[in-house]
Amino acid sequence: MGAGKTTVGKLLARRLYRDFIDIDEEIEKAFGLPIPEIFSVHGEKAFRDKERELIEYHGSQPLLVISVGGGAFLREENRNHCLANCTVLYFDISWDSWKERIHVLTETRPLLKDKTLQEMEQLFRERQSIYAANHSEFQVDDFEALEAAEYLADSLKLSWDIHAPQA
Ligand SMILES: Nc1ncnc2c1ncn2[C@@H]1O[C@H](COP(=O)(O)OP(=O)(O)O)[C@@H](O)[C@H]1O
Ligand SMILES: O=C(O)C1=C[C@@H](OP(=O)(O)O)[C@@H](O)[C@H](O)C1
Ligand SMILES: [Mg+2]
Image 1 (cartoon, rainbow, N blue to C red):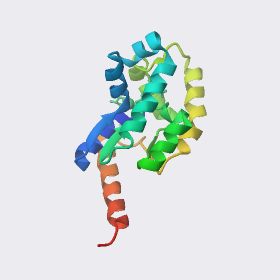
Image 2: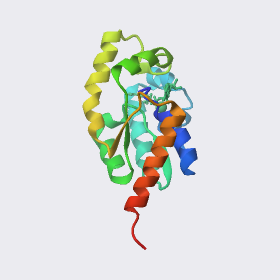
Image 3: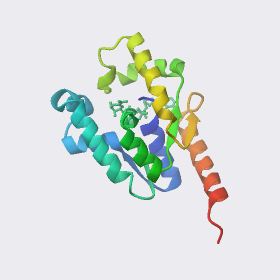
Image 4: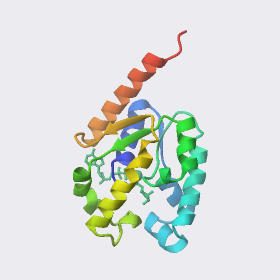
């Protein structure tokens, strides 16, 4: 949450000439409500079920850059689906860098609402292990968003060049 997946994902898609899908934005469209209201009116389970459905659908489409919410990988089926059908990039951010972003996140991330800094740190740390389900890790701390997108686009292109099937 707040590592930069939506911001960098959008820029990365543009550099790769791909369409971009933000699963949170699709969930908001499906409910016709912003995320905090989805949580307060329909509850987290309804949000997670829709998230699951949309990851299954968009994660099966080719040639997209997709940003999933930071809680999506709590469900094993989401992890398995993404790992089997997509290239999964983990945006790793340190607690110290993340702390600096809290003020821009609290309004729009219901899971941070009314939490103390200590509780946020606990949530941050207890989630680290689920993000080990990835194909590649990217340390975001020292990159501006545009630099991050450029770096990831170059890395992906290089890896495609190396692994492309021989003609
Ligand atoms: N590389 C970056 N450096 C500094 N701030 C960033 C960077 N990437 C994103 N941000 C800022 O951090 C906040 C969260 O970014 P966002 O893309 O919504 O993250 P996520 O989708 O992972 O929750 C936004 O205010 C965004 O402008
Ligand atoms: O980590 C989470 O549980 C969540 C992360 C959010 O997405 P971002 O990771 O894009 O902030 C959004 O899906 C929702 O607020 C729940
Ligand atoms: Mg996002």
